[in-house]
Length: 239
Image (tube, rainbow, N blue to C red; front, side, top):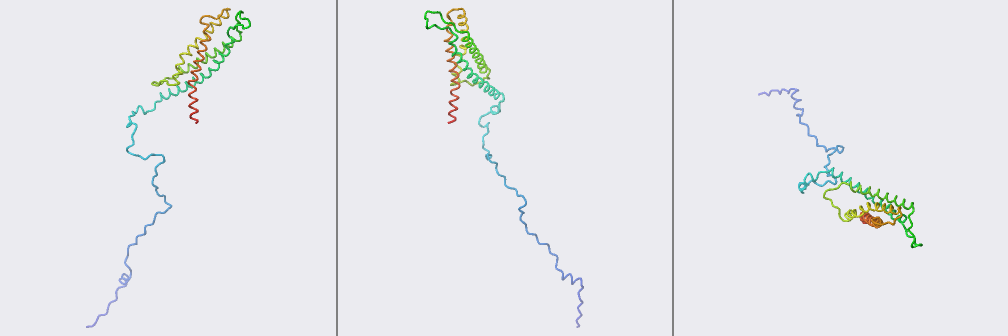
């Protein structure tokens, strides 16, 4: 049997066999994120802020009602006004000491004197200048004293607050020097009237000097009681 000649394969079939098969693309390697891109940093706790805890007690847990924790604007205004009035009261009170002491110093020139050179001679009448100076200083003292008292009276009172210590002494001394400030000029006017009539000072008018001395002593004690502790505490703080 004769062998048949082999038929050559078509050109297209040869090219198909020669071409490699289509393969999928290889996956690209994962690139790290560029340093130029911003990265979200972990949140840092704010300084001074305590860490939040679920067990922190509130003001209501401590027994304070909302009315107690709310700001009281009316009470704060009363406190501010009281502080202002009492500061003015203290300043005027210290200023009043100057004419008060001066009135006592010049009082010797506004009263009758004995003539020591002639024991049996009549009393020497005061000069008009001495009387006028004493009266002017006394009137100035009375006006300043009234202004000082007015600021103490008009200062708003705070319910439940009672004076203690030096403040209580300062308040109680008012019952001594306040009547004295009223009686002293009245008795002084009576004494001056008796002197102008050529009479010797007698009766209630003769107590003018004693009432004035008690008044000045009580007023000075009141001023020292309210001022001395303040200066002492200030020095202690400086140390």
